[in-house]
Amino acid sequence: MSVAAVDRQFFLDDVTHHTGSAFLALTLGCARCHDHKFDPLPTEDYYKFQAAFPTTQFARRPVEWLGSEDTGGFEDGLATLDRRLDRLQVKIGEFEKKIETAAMKCHDVSRPEDLPEGVLKAALRSHEDLTQEEFEALKLYRKHRALLGEMRDRYHPMAFSVSSGYLNGDADTGPSDKKAILALDENPETRILIGGNLQSTAKKVTPGVLQAVARYGDLPAPEFPSAVTGRRAALANWIAHPDNPLTARVMVNRIWQYHFGRGLAANANNFGKMGDKPVFPDLLDWLAAYFIETGWSVKAIHRVILLSAAYQRSSDHPEMELLRERDPENKYLTHFSPRRLEAEEIRDRALYVAGELSPQRGGPGTYPEINEDVAKQAQHRMGTLAPPYQPSTRKIERNRRTVYTFQQRSLVDPLVEPFDPAGMDMSCERRNASIVPTQAFTLMNSRFTHDTALAFASRLEREAEGDKSRISRAFELAWNRAPSEDELAASLDHIQQMTEHHRQSPAPTPTAPDKSVHRITSELTGESFEIEAILDPVDYEPNLHPSQVAPETRALADLALVLLNSNQFVYAYQVAVLSAPDLFRPRIDCSRRRSIRE
Image (cartoon, rainbow, N blue to C red):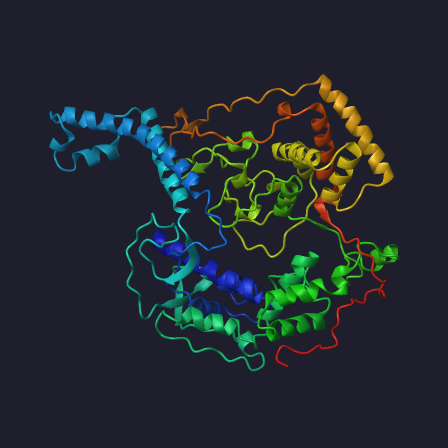
């Protein structure tokens, strides 16, 4: 069994599993090896469902940049990558020149053009004329050249999509990957795999849908074409059919979860027997029907939820002790449960209140500034190491919203990682909200929060005069309210003490970053070598440094740091006071309840 065949089957299983969980909230992957133990999903249905994707490939198709996307910094970004590539090529050229010289000496010629055909090519592959350390350095620099080339590809506008078969130059790895177009098989074969074993094939199946869903009401099963073209469209039309009992409910449940932190049905990826039943099933039905009635408008569902009394309730309640006793998880929505902001929201909100959040939209992922000790950590890539991490040179680029930052599994932003971000390997039905010490350490000690607090203080000095006015402005920006008298007095006292402290303890001047040195252990010999990485020496726009401001500004930054570390900053509360409803009775109008098909 070839490695390609195994990888291909893993890919098909992933597509099948994620399609079932994302749109239908079914744990379809359980039926890959055996009939589902809890839901009416036989193994045959799993492979019939999979037969809609026999030659599916991810593709990045060339498109045009949207008018709303900011492409102003693209020239600088490409120039930075080109400089790094040029410096790498100089190093690579030195090693290749040594190999070329040795080959000419061996064949007693004075020019590389006079070498016998294929000799130089073979010499460059064999590396016999290099020491082990030189060979490891050459391998490292060649890997860096390939990875930087992929980074350069991100400046090409591409739409992430799928295709039936490979597309030359539009494969998943981008335009630098030139693959030949594969001939499409008019009758692709899908067989049941006994126990999910690729080497234990059983009967052949044709494309189909899940019978347990198709039997519900009048939902017709689609007719799948015998050829590859049109199979995914047939499946998509069946999933998005108004009579499909799951799709609309799954979608509105996810939207509800985004606003309340918990869906009406708590397991957003599992509407089967083992998933939590919805607390208000009639409400879920009503929202699903309204979703279809409004043309599957996500904006309409957002509007009806945000304008509801259930969403606008305060986080306080006059009978909170009774509620905690009878409904400790607040399933019945008698008040608004405080929700910790997600990892990306915390970073974006901190930049926003500091006046540092970049308005740029679209384009390739940018690289935020992260702790230097993390940036220097070695990242292993296929037998060697990746290029050292370098943040984007301009603040307007590296301080973009977190959704625009480049993500990779081997190096998660150390500010985002402690706050339960979505995993990059599996579908995430719901973010966790753990409370662990590393979150407090990150917010209190990280370079990002200290730089952001100093920028916050600088903004306060620009927008307000006098300590009292600046403290009030800080509370307004960070907590959306004015400080109480006690908070104002404590803040004034803190600023005075810290101002005196900073007068006596001047900030040290910033130091230039050290050279980045990679330690590589050879896969062939086990020897270790230290190799200096090739960095871009371009001028870097630094953040504001404590040595550049007065002690009063540093003291104000200490107050800003306290506000950024508070629960009121990291959690979302509702402070609106509405008329108290009866206990356990949500004030969303369900008088128009109806089934999906009414």
